[in-house]
Image (cartoon, rainbow, N blue to C red; front, side, top):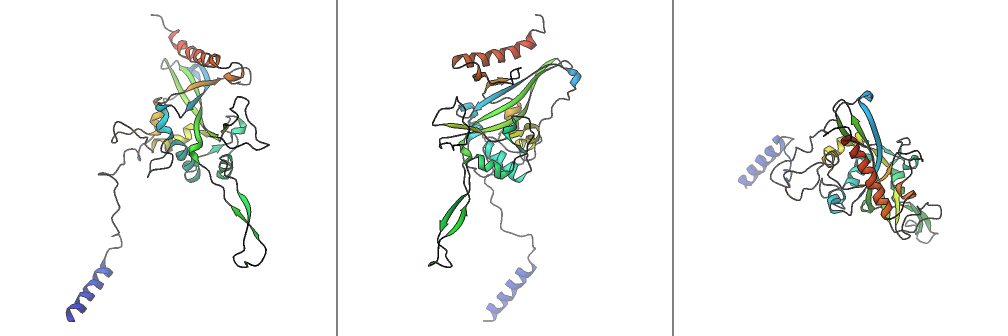
Length: 294
């Protein structure tokens, strides 16, 4: 009996004197702590003056996430730990990190700031009002209640990128910088009566630009989150690496022009659109080659 009482006293002293910082050990999902990507900074751009740019051309590219090369931007469809898809990362940045989302109805001018609620509405997460039984008065009349709408980020199957190609005469190089990125939602839900649908869209598949993000502002977030590397889990690139090193597949859908920056598919169709996109691409790359003599 005395032994039991002595044990209780010792246990009480251990609990009282235990340091406040001693807590349950954090589970490490691996064999080491990953800090390299989390602490990374975006690769800085070369300094550029207006006087150094002797030629420039703005183009818009579309990234289709169905292409195998672009799968790292689409998967996982739902976050796995700290690993996210690009759209989940952008939404997380807007909701938690102060990343600014701009309304796509202004084109790509980055003029009107969007709220998180407005973005969710474009995803189709519309609140619904339904009649339910009053739990406090079951015998009484039905009451109204609001159900929050849900949405799926996996519906984002494309991205539109606005970028500028320019020739820097100070460094004598043709360079490119991404200005903005816009996720495009693909869905089969029948459109509302007041919802605009582009003529070139398939009748049962709708496409809608959700918002624009100013790319230089998003680079910090993109640089701190890794992208899956199927060849080596220890050497994973960041989202910023993917865009900075041009490790994605895309095609040109628009170039700056005198006709309200019209889309290629507004004046060509089918194979002609692909050939026109290739022509614009060749003109950009040939500009630098034509400056030199061999």
